[in-house]
Length: 354
Image (cartoon, rainbow, N blue to C red; front, side):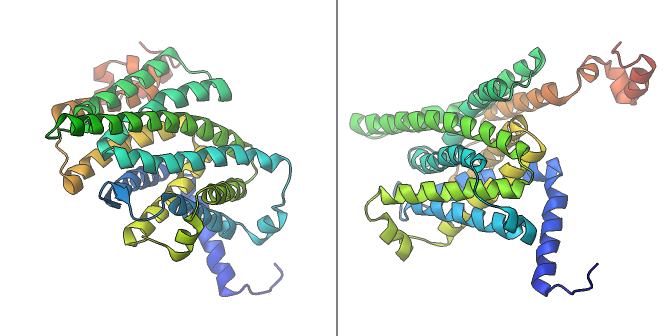
């Protein structure tokens, strides 16, 4: 110990780094944060719509969220870590998921412009299948047949959960033209969500692979959000008048800043989840967020809860049990599970189920 007293700012920074390091390794905490921020994101974006559109520029909101993520990642690095963070050929790999994430975040605004929150969550189920396929091919992690069936059951359960809202998404206008317009808007939302699902799968799995190979998740985030900010700036350049609207913060309100903050928190929670868990954990956390979003839509948007929703979410819960519960426990007798003697019997039988 050198005996040199650090300034109060350094002590506070170290305390914050210790706090994040301590809680970021706890999967339940990360899952809860992801669920809350994911649900809040779609609800806040929907609440910020005015007359079917946004008073603010969505690209500006995405850019500010990326910059906020970058500032947090840099601030959380130790002084030594910031000094050691230098450009290299390896860091260029983060440009790929950064661009994909930027495209996804921008497309989410366009999707929610045309879809209700439950419809958005329904079509978001495509991520379950695209992420599973990309995860298996890219990460090359083998999964059992039971786990594949669990993922299939998860997709079916979540589809059933919000199936009634799809019919409502076509709209019921007083004329045939209004109905066709509503159907056309929903189909465009469907096409956007198809693109979002593949962007999310490719970006998420690649980002997980890069983060797990990095020495520090915060350093990995610096490069990811740096390239993400550059991609957002390029998007604004390609849109005439966007920079002027950004400088004036045109249309920005408290809801808009909450959207930006929520997007930033969501990005950080996903990064730490990739570090200490995997993409499949993220899938189940997102599905739990879908149920919470539907519940919140009842209070904020007057959405009606139906039996199919409850049944679908129950099926999804069963899917989670099938995926994560050890096969030996699934084959154990109910009397052993109730009495709590299953673990002892497993040890006596050498880990084999009766």
